[in-house]
Picture 1: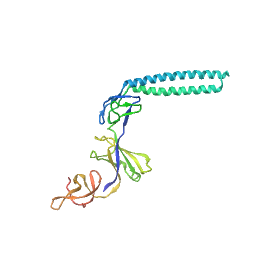
Picture 2: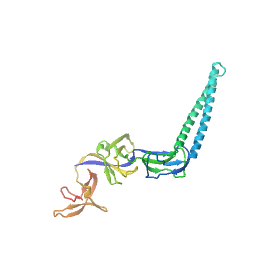
Picture 3: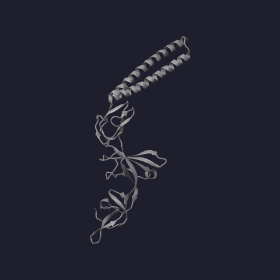
Picture 4: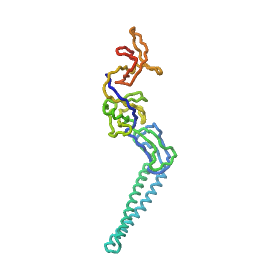
Length: 295
């Protein structure tokens, strides 16, 4: 008897991934990393022309000074109108108008302060930094003109990866997620997830639910890699052989069967899915009780 499993396609993604960009305009004068590079905390990944950042800071400060002056003037006018309306020298409409002007000037100051803050932050570190990560992709080239919000480098933490599978709802209802296994064909490995998380939302079109399987540290895993999740859904009786006993020659898959004279003879098999740990189901070509070579 073996655990009966259902296989579903999955994709590897990083648990911790970030895209680093810029907050001000400027030409990229240094791009010191490439895809696949490992970067450490504090390392400069890219640098934007400091003169452009300085100009942005100066312009932001000038705009802020002008907006603050307008706010002070609007406040004085509004305070004077409130005093004069009590003496009936101005109308209530004038007070309402000055109050609207004051609120508009206040909003303008807040907006300019936000932009000025972004420019100052970008100037103070107009280089992009990252903690200990791997560069997944560079999204700009040396000499490119960066604009505010433009992405430059994507980095991820290779120590925390997960497989994301879209599991049919009918399968999820009977699957035992704690017994799941994740096949990694590109690495020739099968790993046991350390935990699984069912996202409590179902796709109305495909009738599937997204399930995340956090994986143990595994060398060679990268985001976007193909994977396969095998979910146990019950127990079935079947004929199986160790995967190490299979012989693959082109399109032919078989095993060496030991005859009654002790001579190994190659016999072609039709195989199914992997079952258990390191065994493959035999659909045809072998009978229970026959002796095969273990490798």
